[in-house]
Image (tube, rainbow, N blue to C red; front, top):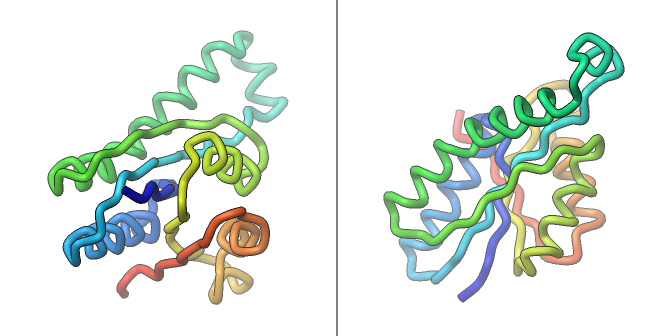
Length: 144
């Protein structure tokens, strides 16, 4: 059974990647999924005003878990086994490559970037992963 990493950021593009994986499963491919959400590190301002870095970590962890829920529900409804992780770091692509390594995934399926002139063809994280990931990367566009 193949294992696929799906980065989830709460966007329609990341859910399009989940739907793409579900179409593959519907076509007979046996998959396990790893869902990953990457939360940016707290800014200096946030650290100074919060007075407690542990509080910021808990808030970021919960925010990531909330963003993962719709994807988890879609996969569970289809009977697709899934693991998930929230990562707190400053650099998204490197964090996702680390998750791919830790979970020994066979591929990454992710949504394309959604905004900005430079992201119209491929998002910056998508492009970084296509260039650096040790496994094949499929980039999925959301239907408009």
